[in-house]
Image (cartoon, rainbow, N blue to C red; front, side, top):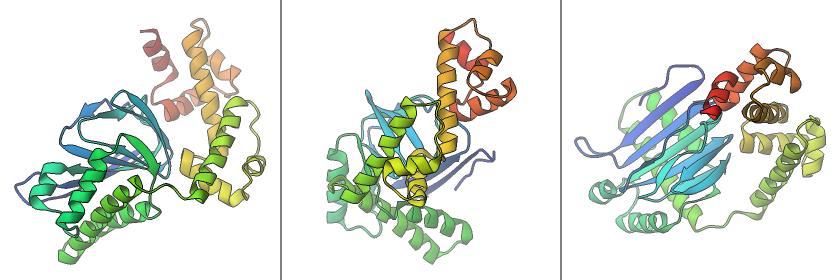
Length: 294
């Protein structure tokens, strides 16, 4: 397992496979408190990729498709499709599971029968790229896998980790063939409706209680579902909208200075504006303007 060192970026990796052979499964997770450079598209013909968006949202490019993944959703990338982020790698928490098809057939996956593995491969390899609601225990399975790994070595610990990785794979395959529950779908729709309203009224900065009422949810449930989908609080999301509008102004009006744009959109200073801008878009306002003009 390896970890990123900066406080704003942490990555951990677990691999499952026999010594001297290609890994069967690779489980990774990454946490970002600040936007990072885009992940450029790459293709692996022999690997099925499952991406679990644990917190926040991210837009991905899969082949020639643009797919938005929200917190609590899983992205399926069949073998042979290129994969990367569309724009900056945004703030949030994401995990992924890579399944090496050939290695899985040769070495088998502990805890999964041969027939079960064949059905899983058939489901995942045959599915088109797309998103689905994650199983409710995804975060727990991932967290406990990494917690067990870091606690101590031993056969029991290894078996626990293998169990968690196999359960993630089985659960993801099951979700491909299983429609989301009506309640889950309804809650997601409620939050997306509020997000659309916020994006249409970026200057209002309505309190969270008002937004919860619009969604028809209690303030506590609204907060939980809002943060799962966006990775932030409503107040933080309002700031994001102002940053995105300011970025558009920087791109379209070359004569306005960064300080003028910062003040126009309610930021107290160009220094604070630059800090918040980098947090959401991964670059400074000046760098963003330079890249847009190139």
